[in-house]
Every structure is written in C-alpha cells, then in structure tokens.
Length: 184
Image 1 (spheres, helix red, strand yellow):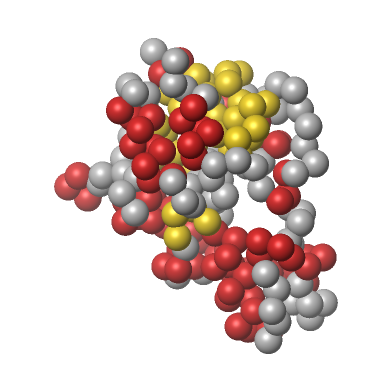
Image 2 (image 1 turned 45 degrees about the horizontal axis):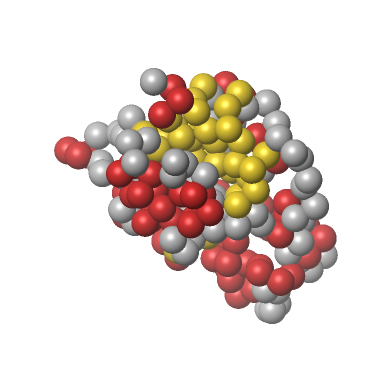
C-alpha cells in the first residue's frame, strides 16, 4: 500500500512562497529584488541588502505570510489528477513553531485538502527529517530532503537546485511532468 502514497512538499512545490516573501522584503527595505531572476541559491542572505541579512528569515515566522501566497501553476489540478489515478497524496512539510498549522490551512483554502468538521487532515504532516517518510514517492525542491528517502525521488526544479545533477532523482519542471511520472 505504501507504494501508492506520494509525499509532497509544500513550499516551492505547491505553494509559490518565494514571490510573497520577496514582496514583503522589498516593501520593508525599499528594494526591487525579483524572486524569479534575482534569487539563485537556497540561502537568501546574499541577495538581500546587508541591513536585512539574516532578518530575511523573520518573515517565515509571520502567520500572515501565507495570506498572499499563490499555488504554483498546475499544482491544484496535478494533485487532483494523482488522486484520480488512485494515489494518496500526503503533504509533508518542514515548518517552524510559529507557523505550525498555517500551511495546513493554506492547503485547505486552495483546495488541496478538505478539512471536514474542522479536524486535522490525515494527508498533512509537519516533519523536518523527511528520511523518516515511507511511501512510494517524494516530490520536493530540496535535494537534502530527497537524498535519504527510500522510494521514487522527484526533484521539483527551482533556481536554487538548478546545479543538482543526481541520477537517482527524476527532475521535473512543472506539474504536468509530475503527473507524467505516474501515468502508466
């Protein structure tokens, strides 16, 4: 049964967090950084003004951050298609204590999960060490999360992982390519 479970990261895979994160930074620091073209690495500090530095990560503690985050193009439809194909899609995301539960609500607000009767979804978990997951596949934009996963490892392309060339990963550039990995 575990081979029918697909674990899916949230940020950078279904939630387009970067543009909203950078929009807030630009407003606070009077900058014009563009997430799509100006951020080329996992660490954000080299791309922001020195007076911001490590404070760029404070935005990730603001519960209102996800109010402006949009789904990645095709992700809602892609997840729905995987479910139509008989897969259980479980969202597995790392988060900080200040954001606990916020991504769950975002997923429900955008149609990825149905929170019946206000209860937690069995298809959502907050987990930092994704090597603990056991399922058929993991879709993630972080190479470090895929390295020790036992199953199909799908690297969702992003500027911060463009240099990753691991032959044990299937690289996908969009949600159509994700679905194509599972259509027989």
